[in-house]
Length: 244
Image (cartoon, rainbow, N blue to C red; front, side, top):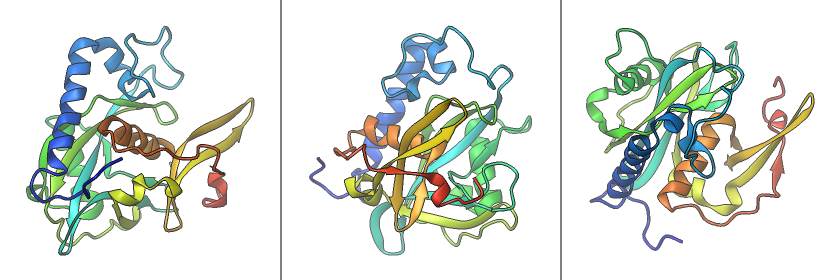
């Protein structure tokens, strides 16, 4: 359990995040094949690539998301920038996500793609962001993307405006609220022939689940910030997204 509050003042949060990025760098150097298949994001990082490429990832596109830790107003407590996708989108409507999207040919690297997408989606000025580095890529078989999370910090984000038609609202979620055991859940989603269980977060009535929640769950674990929580507290995401 943490003794000190998470704060952007000094190195309270910067140092752990820099160490997290270095964890990812070392893993990629030591296990490049497993890293390229998303092995770092397993509950226990894989040391070898899968024997078979997961369905949907045969011709995966590259994408990037921005994991931005920032202060809000005059509060030094760390917040995590997330968005709620517009309900009219064809893919993942209404779900909570990190700012980000596909890496285009004109993007120099995943960092450039993540910053560009954040500017397009919520109006974030890239000059406000101090990029600490990128983590190993994570697979999203349902949409055929390999997503590189880019970790950054910012003292303030300035005024953020959701892009009409793509982002319904901007969320600035206190990191402490993501750590609280009472805000942890397990999503249970029944599909033909399978029951899918995955970590989730329920913060002030907002359900963070799916790919985004997996990234947050693994990140808290790797940082040593995770606190014991009741994995039997189940939630059906369809109760929060009726059209799912």
